[in-house]
Image (cartoon, rainbow, N blue to C red; front, side, top):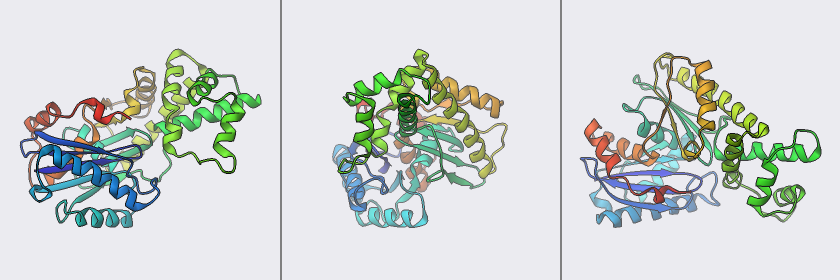
Length: 328
């Protein structure tokens, strides 16, 4: 049996799979980014909750696991990898669990051979690149744009500037007031900045992402401008990531993954694809058909020599849990 985990800023999902790719059990826990939880122990506990639920669902014990891979938001610096490795090994999820940044797991899920560049737009933004020659890079704390929190922060900035009369009016203002249940723009600012108020974290800003995409698709010029600028930045970041690991700049796989890319409108994807066409004219991006946790399962299987054949990948895809497990 093989364990795959995807841990992020909003949720943690664990899957248990047989060697033929059949998903046997699934579980979900809370946020597990060690940079975003109150304590490192809280992050590990969230992973434990998801893993234990998956093991119970599959009706197996931890001793039955042949391999385990964890794609973790917050696996950024060497000491982060050591902390997570030791914590997960102490739980008995194999003696030597594989720890990768969550963007690497998303790339493995999206790319047929596991190589290329992935832009993962979830609550935050993560970028990963991996080459057949062994080069690996992930964005971690390097400044990026495009995740839900980035879109939300850009929306608030536009709303505040418009309220001051320093920028054009935008339909984002009314949408944000309704969403946040606030009577005025100043009340939003007070809620975010006043002494004694809970400081906003990335998940709070990410709540605004759907309204940015809604209004951009509806033609609001300010929202359209936010989306267009994000598209241009992501195109440049994708090219830089490919160069970092020595990928052929004319033919690498570029995968788009994460909940923000699954917005019901198409304007966000269109903006990014358009910007990519200018920066990387020979690259056709693909939208991932698998959740990032499926990539963690594949990495776990490959760690013990199980080849991810098209048949195994299809079996993983065909036995994935219902979409409700991944809703944020």
